[in-house]
Image (cartoon, rainbow, N blue to C red; front, top):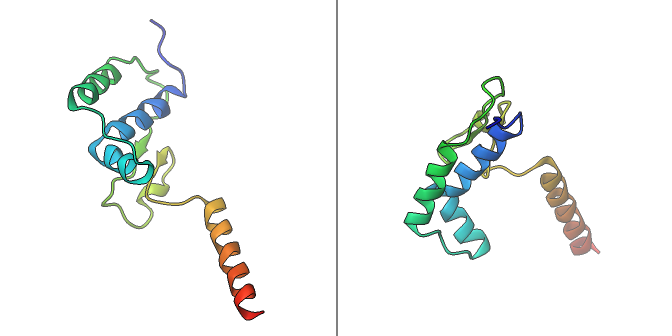
Length: 104
């Protein structure tokens, strides 16, 4: 079997994040989805362990809930605890529009 190339580690890290207890809780809270049954979650994690990744590819990590500061801003790291620059800009624009509407 040929190992996944450079996108493989990101896909595996993302799946591990979704399958983690924290990921399951996040999905349940934000999207109203039910957590996976434990046997299904364990089987999926076991299947991820059997995926062959290119040893030269960078490994991705997820930011833990306890992280602070720049922990989640490292190269090859993603986070469910931080918003994107676009989301921040959109929120700032919405606040500005609300302020202008309130002043009118």
